[in-house]
Image (cartoon, rainbow, N blue to C red; front, side):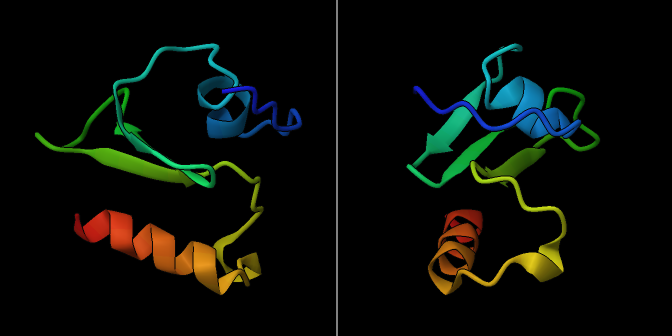
Length: 75
């Protein structure tokens, strides 16, 4: 768990991935973290975030990471 993403103003990178707040982890890989949302809008509200900061979804070009996100989402 030694991942230290750059401070970006992004809640997930800055607080969740840097362990500044505790979250109930569902699953974690080298590239992704899935956890229960800290303020859920639904009875089951899980967030999946890449550990690499990606400014916007259209910037995501890593096919393996895209596949991992979708595989985790359907588990």
